[in-house]
Length: 202
Image (cartoon, rainbow, N blue to C red; front, side, top):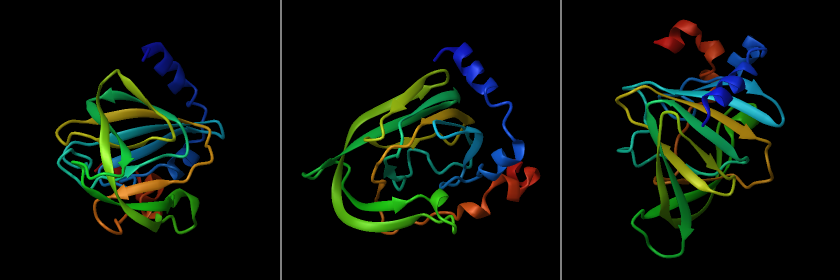
C-alpha cells in the first residue's frame, strides 16, 4: 500500500466531528483487547482505526474460539504496526481438520437499540481453511463480502490497522462458532465516549 495514499486517506478524516467519532468508537469491540476508532463515516465509505494492545487481545492464534464470519460489505485493511494473520474458510460437506462449527445468522449489535449481538441458530457444519495470509506492517489485504474469515493478532506487540469498508450490500450475516451460543459484550457499555479518555487508555 502506497504511503502517500494512506496519508491522503487519513487527511480526509480531519474534518470529522470529534464527538460523533467517539460515540461510534469502542474499546473491546466484540472481542477483549480489540478497539475500534471511527475516523470517517458515510454511506459509501467508512474508515476505522483498529488497535490491539499487547497483553490484552484475545485474538491471538492460541484462542480457538475466535469466530469465523462474513461481512455485509467489501473492505480493505492495512497493517500500520505489528502484524496479523487473515484466515479464510469455506463450508465443507465432509469432515475437516477444523472440525465441527455452530452456524448462526446474526444481527449486528450496531443495528439494534440494545446494542447486543442477536443470534439465530442454523445448523452444525464443517469448515475448511483455504487460505492463511500473514500481513506485515505496510501491507494490506482485501476481503470480499461473500468470504468467511477470522483474524489472528499476536499478544506480544502493539498491532494497529487502518480499515476501510465500502458501501453495504444485501448479505445474510453469518458467524461460525466452536462453542454454542457465544457471548458478546454490550457495545453501549464500551463506547470510548462513555468510558472516558483516561479509562480507555488504561
